Amino acid sequence: VSIEETASNIKDMEIRGAGKIARCAVIALKEHALNIDADTPELYLKALGEGSAELKNTRPTAVSLSNALSHVMHKARGETIDEIKDNLVKAVDDFVETSIGAIERIATIGSHRIADGDVILTHCNSTAAIRTIVKAHEDGKQIRVYATETRPRHQGYITARALAEKGVPVMLIVDAAVRFFMQKVDIVIIGADTVASNGVVINKIGTSQVALAASEARVPVLVCAEGYKFSRETAMGRIVEIEERNPSEIVDITEFEGLDVEVKNPVFDQTPPRYIDSIVTELGVISPFAAYEVIRKFEEESKDV
Ligand code: RUB
Image 1 (spheres, rainbow, N blue to C red):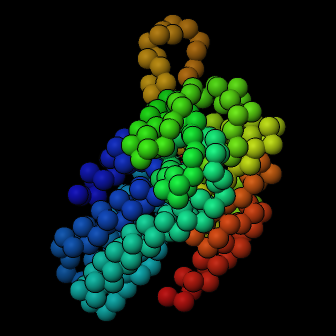
Image 2: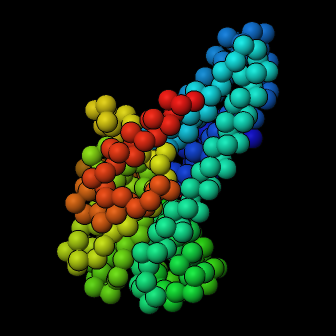
Image 3: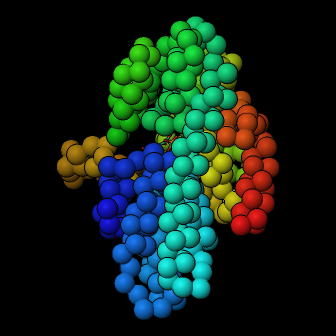
């Protein structure tokens, strides 16, 4: 698949979910790398950089996209075009394998936090969260899941289908019913688009309300997030940009024609660390307040390259 096609599929949310976006983007970059027609290594790297930038500019909030692209671009080094190409291809293959392995590791670790009989609530559609829930089910635990519809794009339908197909009983609810049902919930399990250095978790719009309702009801919130979703840039003072999408995703705007009605569609929000019990990473379970340590650890590893 070409860079243009992948970029457009990410923008349109044909490809969605932070981890999948990152994997599809680096795979598209690999395809591009195999097809660049350049005379010198400098021109080859320039074309590679342009492809990476186009992919990076598709969606602004999930740091996993830029982390994944920066990681593979960093490895794309060499004296000759072939050497650069080989290194990039290897880096992409490694990234895809490692990121899938990270989800499995998170599922194994996170499922230990799910008890037999637990009622779980999840929001939106996170591969890492779903895999964790399914792992608990595979381990023989009798669990049930409330899945929020997740307006306006209804990612909750994908979640409901994915869980039900694996044999996990699901109750689909509207987003506004979260507090109504929270008394019946034992644990909230969600994913993340970005974890900031101060422990703030950025995830689908409504996540912070879910966490607030959970906190009020003394229900623990577990975030499943691979290490490459932690943002080094936030440790350098960068603020995470919250994507605002077209209002037409919410309502047909001709509905309010001639009236002073503005439709707003921010698609992610920030949950402060005090509303999060733990973050499950492939390295283990951490407090959200230890996010900076995860960033440091991955920084050290990239220095070894
Ligand atoms: C998806 C979303 C998911 C995270 C984590 O938003 O908020 O919770 O991306 O998902 P969108 P995963 O549908 O707008 O992409 O665990 O699959 O990376």
